[in-house]
Image 1: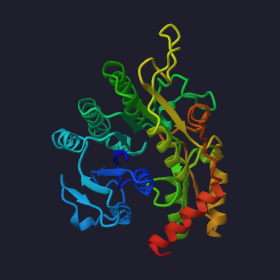
Image 2: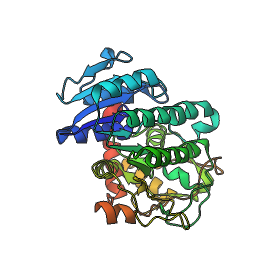
Image 3: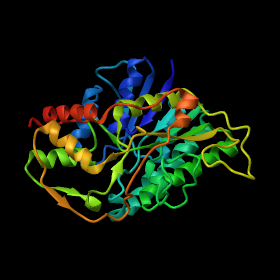
Image 4: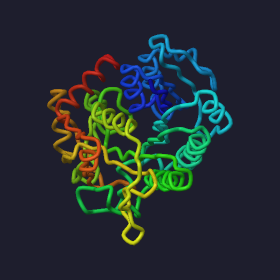
Length: 351
């Protein structure tokens, strides 16, 4: 039975991942800062589902779940290296899945320092804690945003990603570079997870599906950026979680064929790799809106806007390495995923 630390368990992906690992019997410790970047009721609701009462949360204190004997939760910031090191030294985790981060491309234009604190300082603290406590594998959230100005589609882990166009993307690229360094110097197996537009029940309130659904139900207009000339590789939460679990269970061993004369950006001689986890099926923004309208049986009022700074016009994941190495390919249809989100949204907000 593995002992796993998941950071970001009050967050969207971390919450669903914790549930899945608990179901299969792993010992799980969840960690989250529980900040107010978005509607705190959603974060508290997720925690409550896993047996953590928001009223009992005390910074730096491990709380036992009321629903799962094999789950405990701690409120902690990744920047707090003293308490983080103490947690690692006491718990002796087998693997770590780092999903905690300051999220959002557009917010990085307004509050850049939040990304340095959480995504850079916090991540090096995770690396150091893993290094000094014999963690067998660190998996961590990267992002499709790292592809930046790349135009070759679909995006492949074997493409260079040297031109990010938001600080958020740059912070995720830096995580991959830092992870490679620790894999190379200290033999720490690390895997970066480039997620592509994750959606589903309990999804983030700053994401398009949530914003569009809320606005349509309230009779308010939705903002359509780049005048609708955009596409995204929408990936359902259950597919993301399955991919993360397969990655967690299969630490990289290093690529013996890697050569500095012709360096492969996606692998290394060290125990380091990255994976795209996406649906491998981009959807046009206006088709996405149409599916939401059909699911709600309501028509959206549309406010067409120019492209926002930091955004890219299209994402499209090449998942062949995920298929080849881990035997997995996400494939949940968007219509099903949207219907599951809308069902959750109506129940949670009682609309």
